[in-house]
Length: 263
Image 1 (spheres, rainbow, N blue to C red):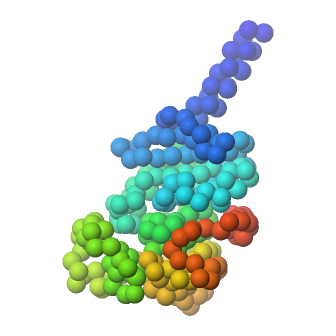
Image 2 (image 1 turned 180 degrees about the vertical axis):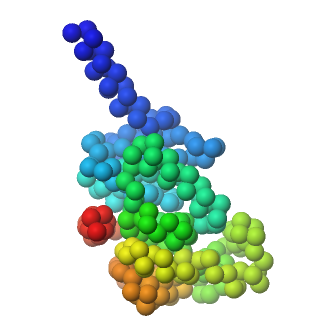
Image 3 (image 1 turned 180 degrees about the horizontal axis):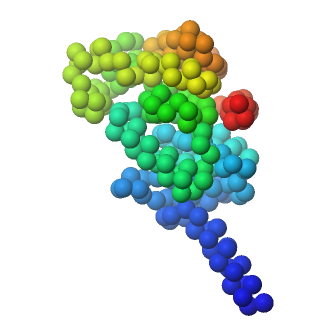
C-alpha cells in the first residue's frame, strides 16, 4: 500500500512539473514562466490536454484580449509564447522560434502543426516563420497584423509609423532606408509555400485602423494569397481602429481553428 502511494505521489509530481519554471495563474489555468537560452517563454496548460496535444502559439502582447486563448484552453489546447517582440520577424526571430518549436514538439510531445496567433507586429513573425516552415503550420490567425514593415513601423504610406521603432527595425534587418523600400521579406511577399501547403488564414481587422491600415497590409496579403489559390477569410470591424483587438465572442475564430486542425 505504501509503495502504491509513493508511485501515485511521483506521478502527481511529474504531472505538476511537466514544464519548467515558476508556476502562476492564467485565468484559472496553470501558467509556466521559464527561460530558454535567456529568452522569456510561457506555457499555459489546460485542465486536461486534448488528444494529440494541440496548441496555439501566441506571438505578441501576452495576455491581451485573451478570449480566444481561454476558449481553446477550455477545449484542451495549450497556449505557448516565446518572446521575439523587438526582432520584427527577422531571421533571428525565426531561428529563435525554430528552437522553441523543436523543444515543444520533441520534449513535450506537442502537435506538429500549431495554430499561429499574431496581433499587430506579431504578424511579422507568424508569417515569416510559417513561410520558412509551411508543413509545420495548422493555420494562421492575424489580428490587425503588420504585413509590411514599410507600412509599420516605417509609416511610408498612410499609416502613422513610429520613427524610433523604424530605426530599430532597419538595424535588426541590416537595411538602409533605400534597401527597405525594395525589401521582399515581408508577410505580403513569398506566400507561395503557404498556399502550396494549403495553410488556411484568417484575419480580423478594424476598417478605420490608422496604425496598420488595412489597404497597406491585410488587403494586399489577401489579394495575393487568393491569386495563389490560398484560403483566406477576413473579418472586418466597420468603424473600428487598431484597438480593440480580437472579437468579444471568439466563436468564429475557434471554429476556424478547429476546422483547420482536422484538415
